[in-house]
Image (cartoon, rainbow, N blue to C red; front, side, top):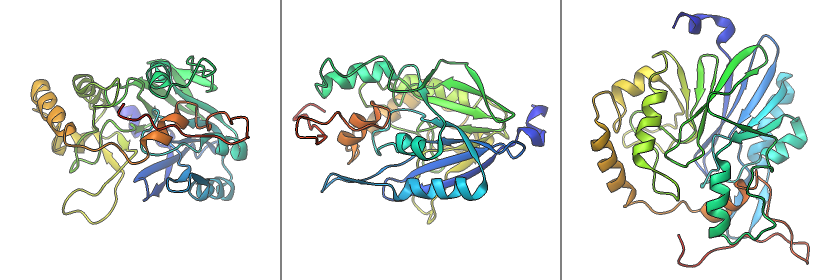
Length: 295
């Protein structure tokens, strides 16, 4: 696609990697207008004490202010199960509409029941400023963007293609590490395969920015940027030529060996609320529930 060669369609991307959760937060901006979006931010959470901190998010704030950016969007690719979102706090500091895919409502319905969140917990996505439907177009400054629904890891995963850069959440990892799990409630390995193939139909030179990295065996540095062409040629789980049924068999078998993420209980309860803590109880304190023998 010749359009991708246009420098006006090449946003600047600065990534902040949180090693505690292995999460990559991306700040993407249009150099012509200095308008920006923050994608998949991290609120630091200490599970042993239940305390939150803003160290990772503060680095984003410092960069945005030092660079002179104006944040238009706080984007979430999905309701993460491995880290808490800092989007509401970042919104207070920097502005921007807080947005996620419209199928967050399905996630809210499933996990609202799992965590017995009660009727006071709205399951309509109203905690977010904007819900993207598949194919919705928007912009970051003057750079055109599109939201693509890529379910499988969760029902609500969205990828955001901004100019020549695609921010694809947990669908794919680096080529030497493979693909995301699909065994959470509402996940589906076959759907994940089809979503990945949709992403890999983008032009080969499209830059892919990932949400996580765990260092594949033999690799000593964290990495979070690759290309469609590299994934198609080298992804160890889903390179060109891998059949859908073979992928589903592999992914399903692999998922059965995986433990749940260490922060899944606080993460999902907070992230299904758009990064807000559960409503305080009568003593003014918010509580995280742990459903026993449920997950």
